[in-house]
Length: 230
Image (spheres, rainbow, N blue to C red):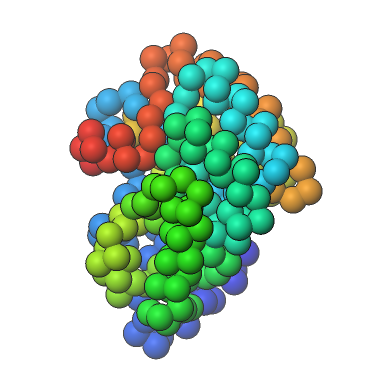
């Protein structure tokens, strides 16, 4: 995967095309990677849902600990599983835009990107009445001109500071070890609530959350983390 990304980045640079990656904060401008580091506040986020089985398991864990999170949803999944998104919203969690078809937006033209965001926003609005104000590009790849476009549409682009790589099917112990070994104040942690074929994320959360609470961390939404200062 790294070799493929490396070759693609080299080709982009050769053509004079800039690309920002969530794994390359050196290139960040207005992309949010983390909040203030001197405060023990953390935002946990979930990509790719909603899912009729996995999202509910995660919601149950969050409810047990009274934690609010941010869910970056795929519009197509919202249309397929509207009742699950309604549960996310009813529980008070924040909802962000993760495109409609989960495409690599860095390869899209401006009209296609606008359509991807608008379709997802419309699906969320029709079910919850809420407007999406946060955007996370699939794979974290986005061109500088697209950052400008997304901002002009009223969105803030949000990436992450810790990638749990739970999408690889990692065990709960491995996911927990990744987070607990790296976490610090201001982190935005990337999880997924739609993993094929089976997710170990709910079990990992049961390990992670009580330890971090014991360490004195509090859990907030991305917007709350952002509003507290960057």
